[in-house]
Length: 212
Image (cartoon, rainbow, N blue to C red):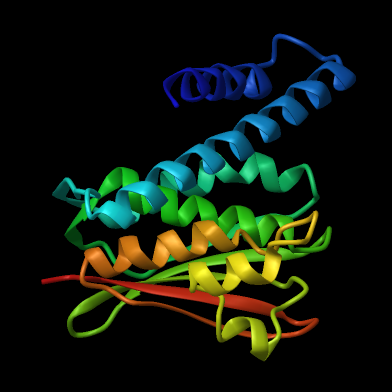
């Protein structure tokens, strides 16, 4: 995983730099970066799936500002969205400091945001909204994409059932392994994750983290 992470960081710098005005060169870099991102997600999913099955996934939770954390992740994903002419807007209604594992929640958010990018049409908007209730900080990832059927929503976070469904398909569904792992990570944080969707109108993924 470490070599891929270093490659991703260097590609970020190259893509965002003004060193080259060569559009084709930057386009090629963005395509390589997209491949690196996919490979990192796959490695994370495989490692976490194995750790969760053996009960060895340990969280390193520290008290930190959640909104600042979200803002950084959104900025990291904005240039990926721009490749598809998709805007990512962020609405932060909470400024709380809460306990969470930075790496694991980053992984959950990356999965949700990158799925939203993948399944959204050009010239659409993805909204990231963070707010609070009496006992939780709530994060929503809203897209205007293809949506999810009721039948698939019922099994979306179930690794075994989604594995069975996609066993003989060349193209996998909406990051199904990552979603199954995301649910387990959020549950380990004593939170909850859910989805609401309508075909052709988009989806809303929402998860909670305890504020107390």
